[in-house]
Image (tube, rainbow, N blue to C red):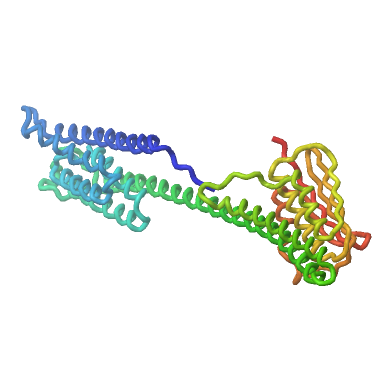
Length: 396
């Protein structure tokens, strides 16, 4: 499973959009800070301070907000120093604390989004402490206790509570965004890992079925050739030809399966129902009489056809390896809503035990389970062995 990255222009627009949003927020905060500082510097008779000081106050609040995504810690430190200075000096009154709180909340949001919880929580505590201390200084420790330096109304402890709630809400929103992104990233990693495991399992099943069938035929024919090499050289040569054919077919299928692991796999058709006659012929060449009967004309999906082929292949491999002299019959029934497979032989074999249960039956059962079908394998009533599988076909 591969993850497709978004186009470069999409990522560029995303970064540009975020930067423009930060600039807009910084401009709004700077304008509010400039207006609040300008109102304080307007006595009844006119301007008492140069207007550039009010503009400088607004810029000092807005510029860190514009750069908060790139340097969140530096932006936080600068904003806290500016806010504490403007409140304590009376440049911005404590009843016009909206601009300072918006600036601190914006940088706290960025810290909570990008930094671990402990570090961002420490930044929150420091911000609440510095801003709250500045509000209390204006309220209780001004040179004239009855008149705050800004000349406005003093809120005291209520102001500290308000500051804590606003900054805590900004931090909580950033922390929630960070946790949701982390959860989404973990979920995507789990999905990718599960897809990789399923792909590994699929390749393992394919390799097992190919190798087991090919090596089973080769082992049987090699034993026959070794036994008849002196008495019946013609039959020994026929066994060697079967070995050559089976090994070439197995190597070709292995190359196809392993080719899917390359960055640019070679696209070759996967085995299906059309390849069953060739599979039956290879099994007959190993000395096992096999009959094939296909009922119906429906064409199943490629995945179902591959599963049917592998089930028949593994069943015939077990007949060659375990049933001894036996006759076998393969029946495939094609219906619009399902495909039924049955492989029966009349050979004699010992009953299977858990210690002797190999990967063949497990692989066949897993293939059927992928389509939520039914699979049964075991002795039949006539003394032989039967493998039956039903694979539902989903209509699209």
